[in-house]
Amino acid sequence: MRLPKKVYICGIPYKIKYLKEMVDTDADREEWLLGQTRHDPAEIRVFKSRTKEQVWQTIWHEVFHAMFYQLKLWRHIKGGRAEELLADGLSLLMQGLRWEYKK
Image (cartoon, rainbow, N blue to C red; front, side):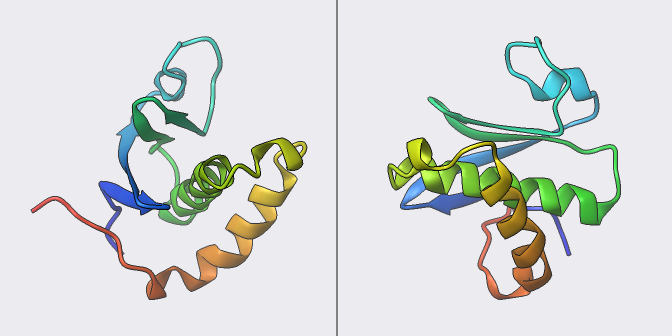
């Protein structure tokens, strides 16, 4: 399955950027991250130099961060564990979602 360039989360278009260097995943270049979600501008940054399954798991994890933020649930989620559990489960079901790809 191809990797998406954009996903709409609660109606907000989040651009997905794939980065070759882990340090570039953090927009502030302060941490080495597998993924990062930013809301202004709306973008998801993903470290790409891993297996496709691992990249998809990171995409899902970051999509849930964005979804919880947009639904104002962020303050109720502690420690990132909910995103991880949901991402693990839904990465198996990703065939059923519609993603927008660059043509």
